[in-house]
Length: 206
Ligand SMILES: Nc1ncnc2c1ncn2[C@@H]1O[C@H](COP(=O)(O)OP(=O)(O)OP(=O)(O)O)[C@@H](O)[C@H]1O
Ligand SMILES: Nc1ccn([C@@H]2O[C@H](COP(=O)(O)O)[C@@H](O)[C@H]2O)c(=O)n1
Image 1 (spheres, rainbow, N blue to C red):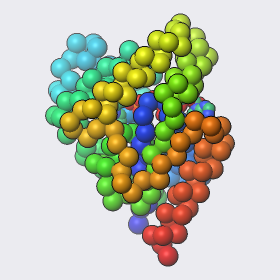
Image 2 (cartoon, protein in one colour; image 1 turned 45 degrees about the horizontal axis):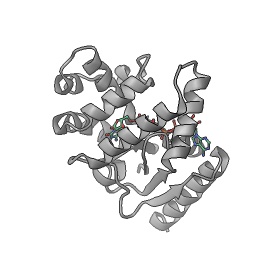
Image 3 (tube, rainbow, N blue to C red; image 1 turned 30 degrees about the horizontal axis):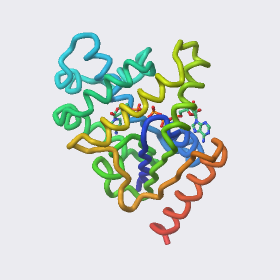
Image 4 (cartoon, rainbow, N blue to C red; image 1 turned 90 degrees about the vertical axis):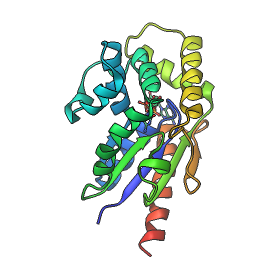
């Protein structure tokens, strides 16, 4: 039987970093569901209609180059507001969650909408300033020309759009463990996440 770990949180909270480490720890598969929306956002920037792009999305599109740039992140959060885009992406995510051997999915609505019955749920957060600083450092390390205030404004804009949309807004599930990593380094955040999953496993498997 599979075991599903749902990890949600706002932009640059560290949920992707934590999800990869947690999946490695348990030898589970990992799906970064933000890539689905980024791939659709990329296609919208290239002139395609977002609902048609979402319906035509293939697994290999998630490996496309250029999905991590700020323009695509903003486009992703714009297409993510459209209910028909979200609906077109549900089956792929749920099928992945049910894969044999266990799965970690990270996103915005995994614990609330995609996998409400996930055995373990985490909500990773940090202050907008800390998240923007981490993302700014990451972009600089990758050679992207930007400044901290622009990254902070982008982070807040995406937070607002993701939290205020009517369909599947960014929200901690009522039964999620909330981890505020503002004052944690990556090692401490990953350890806290694994401890929370171990506790959930002990609860569900006696
Ligand atoms: N606890 C932490 N301390 C310091 N840096 C961190 C921490 N967690 C993550 N980071 C760094 O912050 C940046 C953003 O992390 P990550 O990509 O995991 O966030 P995310 O929530 O998946 O972002 P997005 O939603 O935009 O995809 C990365 O450069 C990562 O190395
Ligand atoms: N389950 C999800 C995952 C992502 N989104 C939207 O996509 C944008 C990009 O996601 P990242 O995790 O790569 O930052 C994000 O801002 C959301 O608008 C979503 O709606 N649901």
